[in-house]
View 1 (cartoon, rainbow, N blue to C red):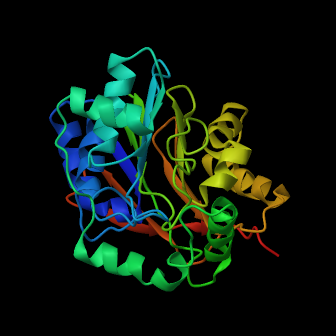
View 2 (spheres, rainbow, N blue to C red):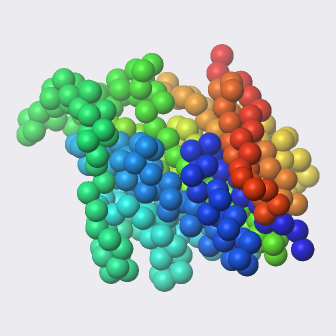
Length: 313
């Protein structure tokens, strides 16, 4: 029986030891991923996930999350969730309690209340100050005139292309293979700061933001979610391994595929992966990006450099 292993984006380091503790106690890969995600979602230092996540254009924090199991390909997701921190736990409730995969907006908020999650103001003084740093532009938006929505869309486009703001988005990924060789993947995010209300990225979209299959492995993405959505990036990595590529080859090809996108707002993309034998890997379109790895034999997590794959001219 092999040691369980957990792989995450760098901001997942706060949850790594908790995840491995779950594996050491005989817990499942899914248990480990949910435990780890909960700690990142509660971390006020991380403005890309959960509590203290940066708000949308209207000052509302909207959370997206998804989970997947590799054994039976079960999955659950929530999107545009407001007023509740534990988006990953709610995604698990969707997967285990409903005949659906994705629940959004007011429906997700209702389900959170029905399942007993604690309601919470997701903003902090620091996150609001960051959001208000664009107050001058936000105040330009009208409230009822005919050009309101066009003006709002224009602001989103300008903020998306601002070189100081193109990385004003973030996500946390966790991939896990437990002692039984079973996989789970999970993603949680507050999405792009100042995004158009209701915008949903790749994080809650199974096959785009994350995917796993016990027969082949697992993958998950961070970065500009619209890119991963259009290329089904996480699913592509797993599919490439299914057809004989190594993990490194699969990650690289999935990145190369992004070059075909006609996307004036294209920005950084990152992928983490695990092959069917539990070997980890990760790539990024930006140099010097890292990810974290920990298995049951390790006393703490190890930070490793991602392979850089150039996707921009």
